[in-house]
Image 1 (tube, rainbow, N blue to C red):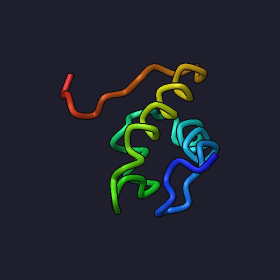
Image 2 (spheres, helix red, strand yellow; image 1 turned 60 degrees about the vertical axis):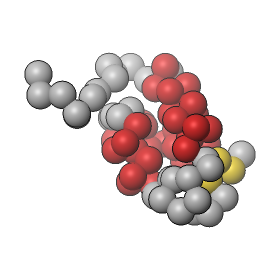
Image 3 (cartoon, rainbow, N blue to C red; image 1 turned 180 degrees about the vertical axis):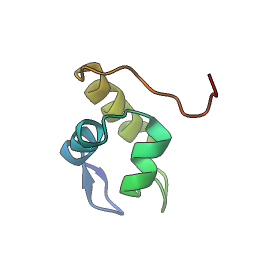
Length: 68
C-alpha cells in the first residue's frame, strides 16, 4: 500500500528500510526515504508503519537525539 503518494513510497519500502538500516529511528528512516518532505500528510501513517515494522525486528529502538 502506498503511504507517501508524493514520493511513491510504500509500506513495504518503509519496512525494508528498517531492516536494511538496522535502525528504526523515525527521523532517520523517513528522511532517507523522503517521506513527508512534500505535503506532509503521510507522516502519521508512515510513522505508524515504521513502528509496526520495528516491533517485528530483532534490534532495539534507537534514538539518535539523545547522547547517552
